[in-house]
Image (cartoon, rainbow, N blue to C red; front, side, top):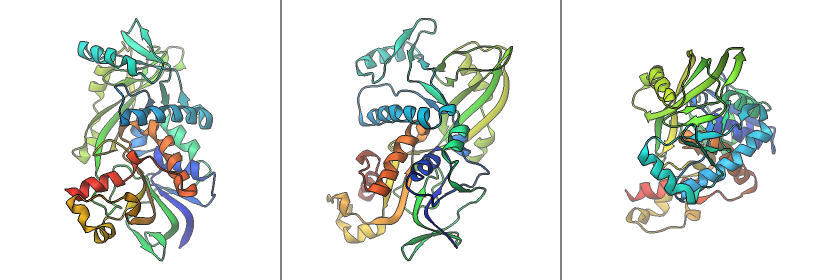
Length: 364
């Protein structure tokens, strides 16, 4: 069996950013994915728009704002060819939405200005990322094992063994909506259906737009033709057959409500199940071993408080998941926290640890 210091399962944007961060400390890293290339699945279907979360201050908005600032700089520095920081125009859906926007103005975390032509508001921080280019660049120096699916993981003699073929000192799961490798019921991941279509059009668009869907700035293909992306809408994931059911006409209709698109030709359709936790916060760090923890502290079921530092953990097993529709905003920020925790024992923010999910689950 081949052995590595670190194995990452999942080569979407989360797995690729973790691989990039780990390369700073170790060259003995393996990145595994069941697809034939990196940046496929949910990451490949993503519109990969980076834009602010609007609203009054709360813990989730604070997380997204910190991640947006960090990740925008991260892409500009490390994958400059993948990011287009052209700004985003956010357009209220209706009069009620406009009133909400006005109420949020005192709490804006980023600069903005009124866009008279669209009736929306222009945020210079807004960007769009080429998902495949970003994942490819970030994982370029990492050894990869693609088109390979992990069916079983075992912890034997202080090492993780995958498919009885690969061993590692540290296992990092970045598997998104597929959590079959985790035998922990408190990890409540909900699949959210995301869609994107790529089009060609004779319309030139100079900024990203967001209303009920997102439309990217166009890139010139030839004298009369431009390319752009529309997406991604979100729906509860009900059946696997949704993968083949891209709502092209619905996306085009929503896009036409933002800006008039002439001579449209659909050139690509993408769909994928994104992972969202039950409370919408991501899940990062080590995993609580629920079986051992409940044996040691059975009174947790009665609501007795126990400091999480006393919980038993799965040794050398780490997770980065639950990023929902903001994967490209969150991934670089979360990957840095995870790797610095693994290597240097730096703290991970309390709101994103698995501890919170375990404590809620055990009381039910």
